[in-house]
Every structure is written in structure tokens, then in C-alpha cells.
View 1 (cartoon, rainbow, N blue to C red):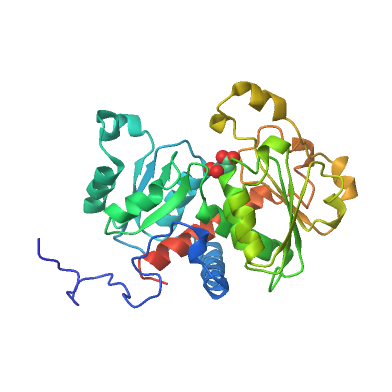
View 2: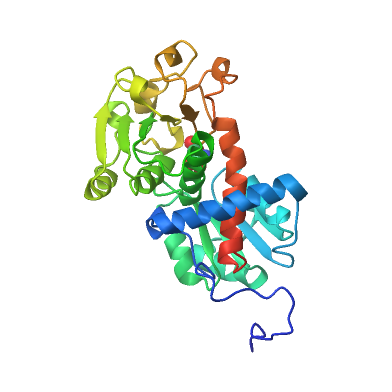
Length: 327
Ligand code: ASP
């Protein structure tokens, strides 16, 4: 079919020379420091716009497909909210069992179908590498919203944006980030460790033995010259921590349910434990939490996990505007 995309009279034209126009967002490895600062600058603008006007027409006429093969509350609804705040619309496919996927359609064919109707596809899938497979099949941008135990790049971007905004920093150089819980299966910490290692930070990993940070991620961090150390107990590192990043033990990824029973509830953050932490620090969690942070801690000003979700909206607005040539 002949393309009409070069027609200068079409409304809502995009800037095809914009650096992220038409690009996929598959991994945090695509970002360097200037790129990150660019995303955060746009996200900061988006925050200002939402606070001032709520919704505006930057992506009017654009359509997003939200294709989720795994459960999601925050990621799918924040991408929907992001698109709608920018004046665009969304085709949600949350229950793939009601789509042709249940008839055996391949991921490649599903994304080829959706790109006929939409401008960008957000994909969550249980298999590591699925987003890259989808991106190979698709001509339109694919945004990885979590691929199994692989990566969750938009979460890591919003996590890093949260750290900057909450701590009011120009840089996170010199800060200590402690990741706690399921570092093996938690894809958000894999992405965050990679992204944070672009800065001169110290990374502490606190986990049960069977849920250690994967060697491959630690090797990448090491290659960047970033200090990192592993612990089994939080007490040793809590007093020096500027950002405590708590994760859920990922029950659904365990092959053996007995292993899950051994490590669930290994660490619980509560007001008593947090007495040993700095007054000026933050506690983050990608959520959902299933007991790792006591609700008794929620009113502490250091509890940043609910605010973190809101930062996610601004970062996802920024990313959508970028890949659609509007930022
Ligand atoms: N929501 C995050 C994710 O999709 C964290 C989690 O599920 O524990 O990876």
C-alpha cells in the first residue's frame, strides 16, 4: 500500500529527525548519561504540564497497543494514562486468552497485526528476549514493559528519575543504593543495576543465597568500574544507604515451591528496622508488595514507593512522546 506518511499536509506530523523517533525501547543498555538526562528533562516537563493543564494534545490521533501476556496493574495503567494525558488513545489487550494468541498465533504475527492499527506497542511477556523478537517483526516502535526475568527498562528509568526528583539531585554520583530481596528473578533490579552503574554509585545487594544478583549483571556493573558488594543481612549496610530498593520474592518464577517457602518473608522493612537508617534517604519498591514493607512504615516521609508510581506516569509520557517524534 503506498505510504502517505510524507504528505506535508497531514495533521499531527512528527519530527523524523528527533533522536528517538521510531526507535524501540528494549533495554537500559540503549541509554547513556546524556540520553538519560534527556529523558528526565522531558519527564520533568511532562510533570509540569500535568500539574498545570492535566491533559494536552501532543499525541492527538496516535494509538497505543498495550499488549500484556502477564499480569500488570501499574505498568499497563500508567501507559494508558500517559497516552490519554497526551491526547492519544489505547487498545488494551490484557487478557491474551481472549485474543488470537489462544488460537496459537505467534508473537510476531500478533505484533504485525497490532501495528496495522496502532503507532506504538507496549509489550509485557513471560519470556526473556520476547521484546527483541517482537521488535524484529515490527516496523513500529516496541516498548519492553518486562520480559520474564530479563529487563524492565521503563521501570528502571522511572526508578532513577524518582531518585533524582526525590533527593533533589543533579547527579547520583557518590550515593549508595541498596537492593534488597529477590535479586535473581526481579527484573527491575537487573535493569536498575545496569542503569545506576552509569553513575559513580555504590551498589549493595542484600538477598538470600538462592536469590543472588545474577553473575552476568554483576559482570556488566564491574566492567563500568562501579563498586558493588553482596550481603545476606540488611543491618550491615542500612546505615550507609541513600536509596533502599525493596523487591518482592517472585513466587511465579520458582520451579520448586518449597524453595519459595524457604525465602518468602526473609526481609521485612518496618519502622523499628528503619531507626538505623539515615533521616535523609528513600525507600523504594516497584510494587506489588506482599509483606516486604510493613504498612506501618507508609506514613514515614522516607517511604517513596507511592510517589514512585506517579513518577512512572511522567517517564512513560516522555518515552511515548520521544518514540513518536514529539519530543
Ligand atoms: N511490577 C514489577 C514487575 O513487573 C515488580 C514485581 O512484579 O514484583 O517486574
